[in-house]
Amino acid sequence: MLTKNRVNEILQSLRERNVVVLGDVMLDEFVWGDVTRISPEAPVPVVDVRRESIHLGGAANVLANLIALGARGSVVGVVGNDDAGKRLRNGLRELGADANDNLIADEGRPSTIKTRIIAHSQLVVRADRESRTPVNSQIEEQIVARLKDALRDANAFVVSDYDKGVVTPRILAEILPFAYERVPVLIDPKLRNFNFYRPATLVTPNHHEALRMSDTEDHSDDGSHRAATVIRNKLGCDAVLITRGDRGMMLLEADGEPVYVNTAAREVYDVTGAGDTVIAALAGALATGASMLEAAALANHAAGIVVGKVGTATATAAELITTFD
Image 1 (cartoon, rainbow, N blue to C red):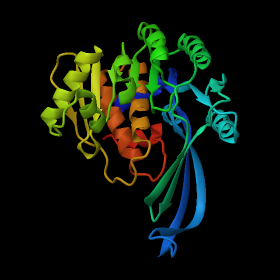
Image 2 (tube, one colour):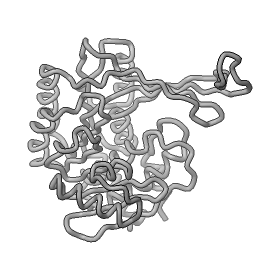
Image 3 (cartoon, rainbow, N blue to C red):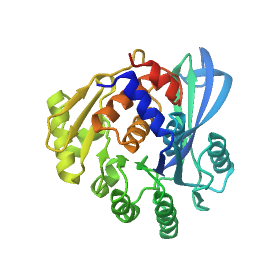
């Protein structure tokens, strides 16, 4: 569906595009080690820690992927008044995000941290430090004001909803109509806010989310098609793209036939953050004027790169080009 020359054209155009992201920013902390014994206190492995690493996660990782592909952008989100919040601000600054710091401090909540302990490249346990309570009305007002200002210079808008309380019905009701009149609007959804994702250009649930949103249990290709049709009819969105793990993706535009995109992954080590990569690549491509199908193919290749890496990762423009003949 995409030639290397066309991919080059899209990525060259992307350097002049600006994408705004709204969502739950977080830190992904990884503790790497080895297991050589079982604890005498309980039947659990003892991990001998070898190293630790911290990466931007959630909506911040969507922005990291956009910048890795060559775009400009900013993320509007909420952090606590804590060390993790400072690390998020510093991480975005180091990333080269737009100069305006659109992370809003909320004294009443902690910054979200997901800690994964990994031994021999396998996840042993994950510990989350977070608040999932919706932000208060004063924070909502600040978020809407920041978004309206940022969207005036945007070429695409992404909502990265991790169900941590930053994306609320009120914010969606105020900002989606405003954004949809101006730029492509892409939603990485969660069930809690499902009925409020309107209007939107593209909604991108994974396979399990799509089945829950459409109240079906059919895991077949036909089941994915029916789920996408139900989601389109409920939300009135322009298109639905369902990510289906090792079965690739399924794109349904308007009233057309579904298009199935086979996975581009050669080896799968870790799916952490793959959804962030998918929606970043989709948004970047649509921001350049690429077709929905071209955007899906590009996102599929980008996801194939990051699942071949362990931990939260990004796909760079150079890596992406090498995956096309």
